[in-house]
Image (cartoon, rainbow, N blue to C red):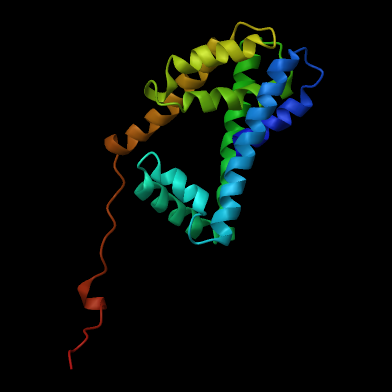
Length: 201
């Protein structure tokens, strides 16, 4: 939801950018559908503990009834916890917003002269494309996606932009290896003498 919302916000802020009308319309349709689909699922899961008849039939058609039933049941439990949903959306907006901000900083480092709103419009779509399980972490797929997307706003540095993002992610994630080299001390159990003994009746 945050990626599609940020994409739609960037699209509205990039109306002055010379992008073909067909491309702008396609981006708008994708962003709107990406927002509406989970919202409709949320409303259905919030109001009904069992999926609607149409959804149940769609689940039986590809022989995924058990998966669809378990997915809807889990969605129903989460949808009833509005506080949890609010916290999840807040953390997701923060993390995705920081990811897009990193693309903006990398673009400045590469000297890419692209409006800020264009990053909001294009980076979420590129991130979504890299989620397609074609290659590990979207390697190669991300370069092609960002190259094509940022070519729409007049730059050929899209692939380099994603490569910098991937390189920084690898460096940051490698920091977790420090826990293997310098493990945290194990928690010590309380002394048995300080624990009262409970006699069985």
